[in-house]
Amino acid sequence: MRYKIQISIYTLCLVFSAASYGALDRVGDFALLDERGEFHQLSRYRHLQAIAIMSYVEDCSEMDSMLGKFMTLQSRFKGQGIEFLLIDSQGLNRSQLSNLNVELPVLEDGGQLVSESLGIVNAGDVLVLNPERLSLYYKGQPSVELASTLSGLLQDEIDNTISGGEVTTETTTDVTTTGSACGIDYPVKELHASSPPDYATEIAPIIIKNCAECHRQGGVGPFALDSYIMLLGWSPMIKEVLLNRRMPPTQVDPYIGHSDNARYLSTQDMQTIVHWINNRAPRGNGEEDPLESFQLANISEWVFGEPDYIVTGPDNEVPATGVMDYIYEDIDLPFEEDKWLRAIQYKAGDASVLHHLMTFVTAPDEDFWGGEVDKESVTRRFVEGYAPGKANAVEFPEGTGVLIPQGHKLSMQFHYVTNGQSSVDETQLGLYFSDEPDLQEKLTQAVASRFVLPANESNHEMHAQHVFEEDIIITGVRVRMNFRGKKMKFAVELSNGTLKEFFSIPAYNYGWQPHYLLDTPERVPAGSKIHIIGAFDNSISNPSNPDSSKEVTFGLDSWDEMFTGYLTYHKDVD
Image 1 (cartoon, rainbow, N blue to C red):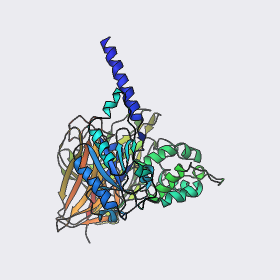
Image 2 (image 1 turned 180 degrees about the vertical axis):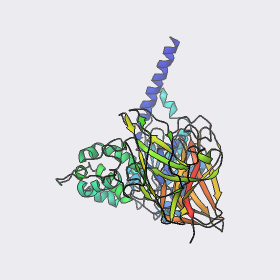
Image 3 (image 1 turned 60 degrees about the vertical axis):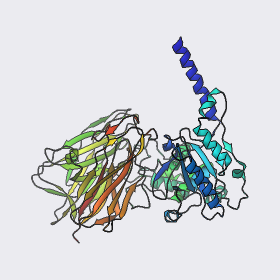
Image 4 (image 1 turned 90 degrees about the vertical axis):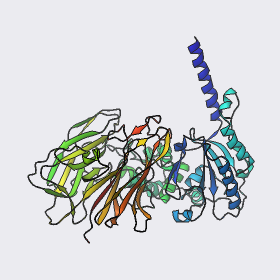
């Protein structure tokens, strides 16, 4: 009986607590980079009590005064579980934001979409947000009321509402006025409100270019965007994943390097889609539906012609549901001499379940991991990776190739996702050989670090490095962490001691680990030191984290952790 009473009391507490929090205004999850290229997402601050964001507008005459008040509060509450941030509601670029000379991170809201969604009206507007429940504690100017709200949060006034009190979002009158000299204009929002984007000529082309490869019948996307009706039905989720940067996947910093393997989406395209959804997603007058008539190019064809040799992978059975661990397979090769690869192409057996595939050339006594098992920096022969939604045909830079020494084999790592239907995948890899003399070998340097990752640590910083003893050209990079990976960037140390960053993944996603081929290869002179800089998030704020209370060490299994940056390169002979 005592047990039942305790359960009932606990249930009542939950009901009262939920009702109390329910009175707070809701906000949508969002994510932005700041002026240093760091990633900030509201829901990834769950380890804190709240975040306070102030709208920053550089040319507002009252900005210095409002910023001073906000900074005073930041000093007062420093280290007490409240993160203080600024958001650029004016739409400046990275260079302009970097020159502002303010102490707090400034979130880049180039298209003003997050400022719009948060209802920011004036420069200096402050929002105090609950990252756990995506709700709003306070909205107004930096004031006595704001200080009181912050103090109340730290005094557990919210928790005390179980006794029957109700918490509501506090809004000061300042934020509801639009006559301020520092009012914020949203010109693109107003333009699209008066003339919503056209589905056939503006929306459908963006979807075809950026989404249709995966979100199609038989594709790896969980639903098909193959008609206006389908797009309309999924439009709330599309808006959500655009604003919180879950899609397009493989989010990289657009200001540091560039790779066609990353899925960039321009600010203008994001505004067009979100505003179209906000304006009730009109169908327009066009009779033809571009999504219905669109046909993908036949990615089952061999792009470079019939391969010189076709590797056929194993019949991997994929169940209808559940989470599959990686599958590792070694493929013996019959070659009686060394072979040089000039190009490769993957053909997925079932593209709807094959999420990614990595292939290395390995010696007879090696497995997939090769020297990475016991070395922090090791040179390897990486063939290429498979990523969903594209032809997966790669021709190596002229004058280079991947060497397969006689007697070596291929070691493959398969990653599958379930989609509600059982399947069997038999993927093929087409090899194209080269007879050119004096090829430069395309190699990959795996640069790692050993560590112990503490429990409940939201930003455990990591660093690894390697010195190249010869002139090289870096043509691609890849990141490898597991569930607790947070970010990684690649930099070369110049002769004057400064670091030149050449690629950055500020929002690492364990489910997406492509090989980023650099549009502009990075020349690195002999003796240069490459730095791999990143962090883990082993806290409750990491949605991929299976257990934030667990201390984790280095290991090659998915339940362990890795911090490895892969640098694909060849000798620079010019």
